[in-house]
Image 1 (tube, rainbow, N blue to C red):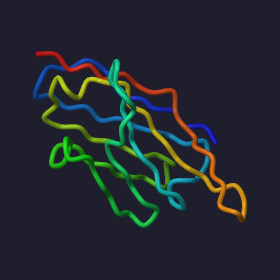
Image 2 (tube, rainbow, N blue to C red):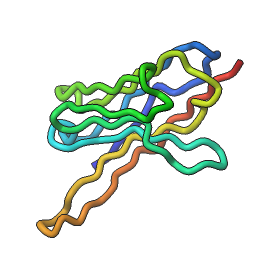
Image 3 (cartoon, rainbow, N blue to C red):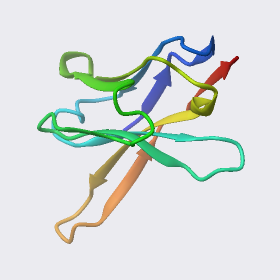
Length: 120
């Protein structure tokens, strides 16, 4: 499966962006996914998660500002980001972990990432 992110860019503090992650086939309706980000010199961190059943979870740092949603018909997941701050600057990645056998082994699939830069 291929994942392609888009929607990144440069915005000022307080601005908004909506990221998209398009999958090459229908996977989001049957699998949970996550939006991650990685800032320079820092580890990749989970920003938001969306289960196949529609449950969401967010990192404390983005709660109330970011919203993850899904359009199954378009094989697309979105990350709406509002009230952006300089600390949100990072490369944002879409991730799906797919189980590949009955033993439960799984493979992580990642997109190429999209850069978000927030300036003051």
